[in-house]
Image 1 (cartoon, rainbow, N blue to C red):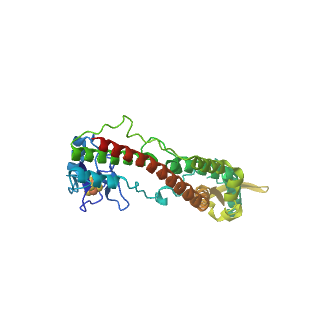
Image 2 (tube, rainbow, N blue to C red):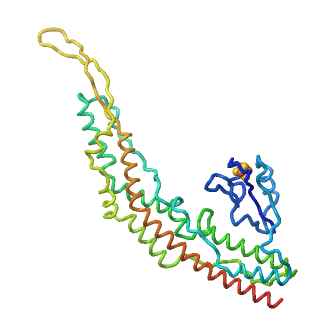
Image 3 (cartoon, rainbow, N blue to C red):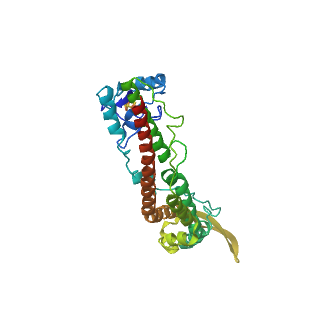
Length: 332
Ligand code: SF4
């Protein structure tokens, strides 16, 4: 069997990330290899060699690998001992799915940048009214949109199995399949015989549990529930507290003055306009913060519950497959 190894020389240049299915960025920015680097039998070696050659510090290499050193029956027995252990898993770090800034579109007002106000205060008051009209009064709907986006874009891969890259459960099943294939390949190497495995032996049928689906449904219900979004909105500042964020600009205009006793004159007068970008951004930031306070614990409970259930079921299937392998070995 072959194993891909990343050495300490890796400088975290990122050149190899995504070039090969197994290589990705670790928490420290350096390359890490999934599945302990054990390569599936059908790996395209040419492509992998190209990635290895492109590493500027020669930090990647392929090594021969065996789970156990002993050969023959002794080796097979040792190997079965390892296979009987349940698959290890780590709960995903909350950093991956915790509520982090979800982008909220900043609305545009056609009334900004119009130098029509005669005083600074009147421009601020008009700006605050306009901010209320285009964004603040829509805050409950905005919170609902944010929660739905968070649920679909960030949380979903950690609570629902979907057959696509980036999905936590899909990755776990692929890892289990690669591991099982590697164990079986080593058993076959040690016995010198091919195991007559059923056609669908490497298929895992595990899915999310009913209670996990129900929990996720509850999250969906929350996401679209107006009362719940309103309770998040209650944590926001009042409209008047956003007054200080309304930006005002001024200019000088020459204004024509008519006099009943003679010719018109022109006099300088200040004119003011409001700008709403900063105040809208501030509200978007506050909405994100309130959502983070409300959603993080709920998401963590949901994800942890889902992952524990999933691995419980995955391990049941795993041990059934190991028993089948044992039976087949007995028949060799
Ligand atoms: S190309 Fe080499 S140095 Fe760069 S991240 Fe990959 S392993 Fe590390």
